[in-house]
Length: 171
Image 1 (cartoon, helix red, strand yellow):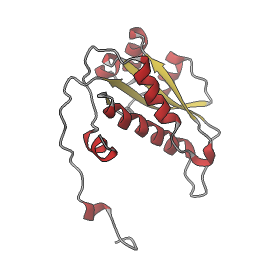
Image 2: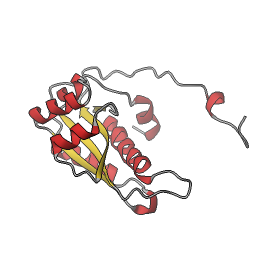
Image 3: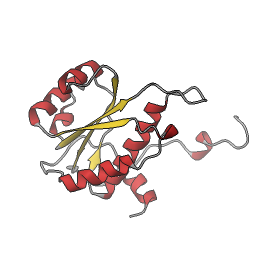
């Protein structure tokens, strides 16, 4: 499957089969994240792999009770060990770089027959307490990973090109 097909097939999955994600598959996903580009090659991303049922249930509560967070076979807690480096354009590096690494994971997950869902609705302080994450580290996203109960493609509601692409200047 080529990258364009993977992008079209990627969807937010909120229901997972009770099927384990093997370490080999998980390591391939994490290797894809490791290969992602980062500003100044800082590679500030860090990932905590959570498989323990009790811990996943605690993360589910920290994620505003989203049940599928606790039901996924694996939850990646996507963190940044950052010095808050700012690019010349004024943006912090770590949220952008971590998003690129996570996107590598989500696309490779589709290639492996897996589903994911970006979770930003969580309480960072609670996640840090559950996983003993130092104050200096930012928790940016939670990423449940597993085999979707419904693997069928989903129609995406996206703006047309003429609404998002401009030529030569803003119009």
